[in-house]
Image (cartoon, rainbow, N blue to C red; front, side, top):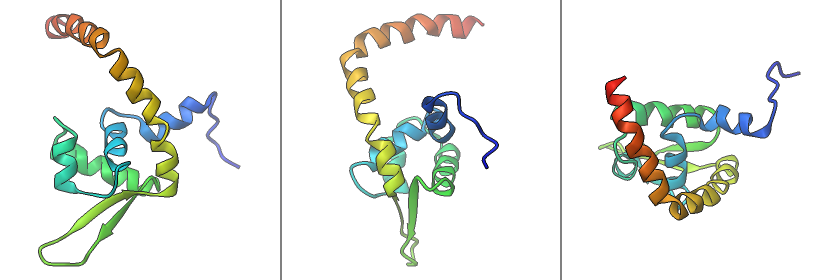
Length: 119
């Protein structure tokens, strides 16, 4: 029996996708496997350390699969597992919402920035 009891399904999702970068990684992997360098370019502003950490966590959680081609120079790709594809499919409606409300969200973010700098 599991000791973790989620009060709602969103808590379960956030247990896997918590953090700023994981949803973006999944979003970009939904279109097919990617190399680390490709993900670094697609997930803008993520540090190398955070990208590698999140890729490892998502691999450990069974959301993505790491494919090592055992070549020199190293060639590694990441792809979604079936579990990851089921989770990534939920991001499309969020993406649509973000697109529809991007101007409003930009205004909110800009309004927060002076407060964040002074605090």
